[in-house]
Image (tube, rainbow, N blue to C red):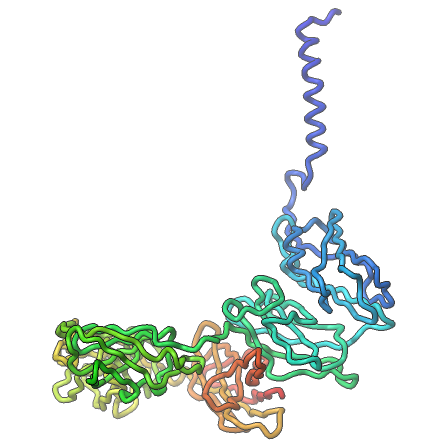
Length: 566
């Protein structure tokens, strides 16, 4: 049978097309369609040199063989080599195998550790489940020193690096000198620096965002160890280290500006939140124009933004050029005002004070629950208030609407407190009512609202319990009070102070799962001191109780002994 000419032409056209389709199918890489999605993390299957190899030649090439293809950049940025090479290593990929080239070769008689961090991701963006470390030595044996512990910080600690510097060759400055040993914390904040040479080390936890092996104080968090660590043949490993990493405030505060709101009110604006210490004294301020002095009659720090200070002054001269000078002041980190940033200028106002003050906040808050029976009620306002107690229409009452007797005092010119004469009743709904037109500012302006109402409910003491134990310091001869905090994650927190070693107890706390942390305030400033990287100042010693403490109603949890490491 003869094949028609059109059919022969169609066959000739289809054959090359089929060849092209088959070739494209063969060239296409990746998993075939269908079947389960690969969600397994990448891992390292083999290395060269093999782990724990000794007498490795100085010109050896280093290879890491992965079980699957990984994203090159994520892997290269997650590799840490200790001791750090003098020059940046080079990377060459051979499919799933990575070759690490160290310029100049390896150093003699050294233990090397190549760590691949959890930032390494496969082509499906799945990260390594845990970091991997390869150790080998160019000498006859491997170093066996180790430092291990945990890094704490706000947010995720994974990826924060632990830097170790050998001591003996001058004081290390992490802002200028790269560390000799580096590792990375896992998702729990845990770290382990192993295969260290015996000797003394200084440790820092650094969030090295730009990965340049230099600490940037303006952008990166840092944690400073509470002491240096010495690894010896008798004690080659130290565990349980704890570093708290945070962005350090290294800049002294400054008076950023002053502005007259009206003829009697002046606002001072600082560059950051300020501590109330010393700022609350009117004698701390001098306001002048020409040879005249403007008196400061009252002042208070803004409750919503502690970078602002509100002053009540004598009558200002309209359009007069004033200079205000602040004597002393400290930010929340304890830095004093810069000597060159204590003054500001403003123009006197002729505007009369006609603005109505307003209510800002209360303690307890409206609709609060489980309020302690010994609670006082505080009300904060937007400006300095006149403080007559006679005729002040304030009442705290329970469901019976009978006002409770008590005493009103002013904590500042803008915050009043009512303390009942007796304890509140348990599991009871209370209401605060105040006809606010009975309260006026220092210029006679009434509050903007006419009635203030706050409702809260007291706790039931039968639901309360206790946590107790004994406290001991492993470092002899130290002094200073202990600050102990018990907190429920994303919940209540309680703090007590123990003047010395011995028994401690949290009383009347709500049931829950509690975490305990504590530190010793050896410098006596009433807060945890995080230390300084350079010139070096160690952080105050701080630690966590290793277990979660379960507290049940009316069932005290005792025997929780706390030990502060040396």
